[in-house]
Amino acid sequence: MTNIVKFGAAVVAATAILSSNAVTQSVFVGVEGGFLQSRTTLDEIFPSTIDDPSDTSVELGLKGGYDFDTFRIWGGLSFRTAGSQVYHLQNLTNGSDTVNINGKFIWQTNNILLGANYTPSLNYKFKLSLGAYTGLSIVKGEFNGQASYASGSLGYDSKSGVGNLFGVKLGAIYEVDKNNEIEFGVKGDYQTTGIDEFDNILNYGIYVGYNYKF
Image (cartoon, rainbow, N blue to C red; front, top):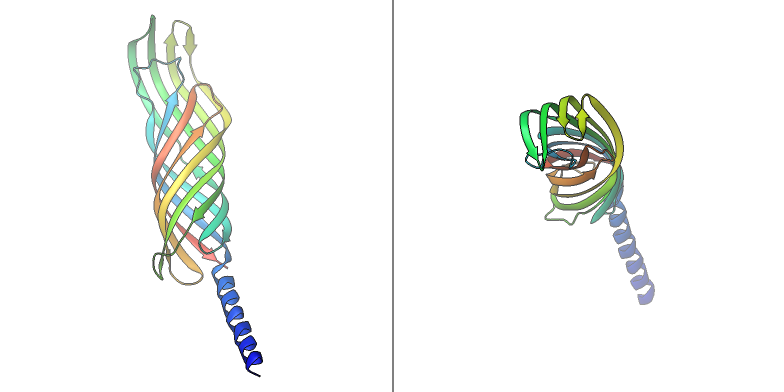
């Protein structure tokens, strides 16, 4: 009889543990917004004395994934507003070349993302969120104006390309209740462009998001 009681108690305890784990694991969907500083590196055909174009960008994203309690995996889409910078530069020296630029550089990206986050509990309401993500960037780069140099000239030019993206995030998750949570922190990523004039793009800034857990 004693063994039966012990076995019954063990089954109850195991069931409780498994039920608890099942509760903390769930599918989630969410939205995210960010305010980023974005800088693109120009191709070497432009003088090295020119500061690379930089601007602020707003990001809006959708995501969905699975929460395993102490870590989660997710996939999503993000859309970033265009960055731009205007140049009015005359008689710049690039080696033996003289360059004149009068125009605006514009760049914009939309991204397909896949990521994973380590999310240990800090207390009963807050979790740390340390993550990395990668994906594909659909990039549009545009020069609107006139640029001249010894090897040629550049007028209005608009190109699209597909590149890779690699990023990291550091933040926290506030659990409002078992179904709702708010996520916030800092993030940064590096993008290749697939476009000759724009070699790569570096973005960094803050983000905030909302997730619904089923």
